Length: 415
Image (tube, rainbow, N blue to C red):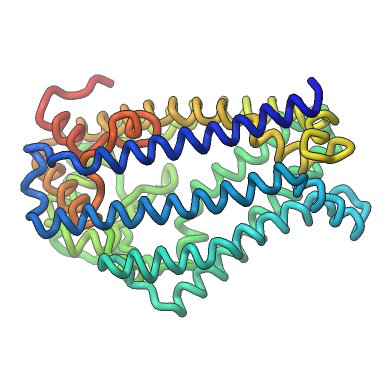
């Protein structure tokens, strides 16, 4: 395929994907004005619902501005051979291909980080503060950014360097070895993230003895689920929004409760929320998701390996010959349709898993507590109660609140 044809193809994919995404976003915000369904009408009074509508619109409009900014920058880089220009500049600094790729990707990364700073500041200190969610101080905001930047440079930079070395040393098996390395890294982070990374940002303390811990341990014993670690994380220093999650596998598995969750829900509601997470474990959803994601990632590496040595692909972006960073960048555009389809499939499976975890809650007698907990969490976060069905189908990893309540009050979902 000729470079000009490839360029038109990747440009078309980029523009169509953006237009499709913006169209769905417009449909979603338009649909959010629909009347609240009957089972959810007790969540908001008129004043709170008006606030929720303002929050959704503020978030969406700002998201549109950010999306158009990123789209414009990328479009200019494509139309003006900006990536080839940057590649040429970097090559005047060094002839080492490893360093060329690292510097090239590093410059794009730093540009993204710099441009995201005012975006994050506005979202945090204007939108989130206006609606009563933000608890971050400017000092905490800066330290969080610096820590995140340092971690990205160290961890992502190391992974990128290893991937580049694999490409240089064993190009014929790059797709397999790189996939294995990235998979190992992701599995390691999934196992140890809460222990190694979270403490850099938040304090985690064991849940103290009392009514809540006793209720959790009693429920775990009832459903034959071993709990060794229950931690409370001080999320309230950043936001008023609530959450809870499981992390790790085997003996390193731990339950993490946001302190905001403990402050907002009753003991039985918290047990219901944790019952949902235990349901994921009982139904082996983590392993099932892993069994699905690994082949998907392998497919991506196989295709990437086929495109990395393509001179026409590099020439489509204005360069003379193939290089790791340029070809990977061009591939990212061409892979977008495949990536979208795989993401949609993953979301369908994820929503099914959510129904099954909720079914576990229902079977164990906590359906109404789960419903009340979901209502409280959703209402406090001012989430959209009436998203567009197509937007939900393509982008939601969880069913809507109405769908979950309906399922909890009707027949159990089959495994």
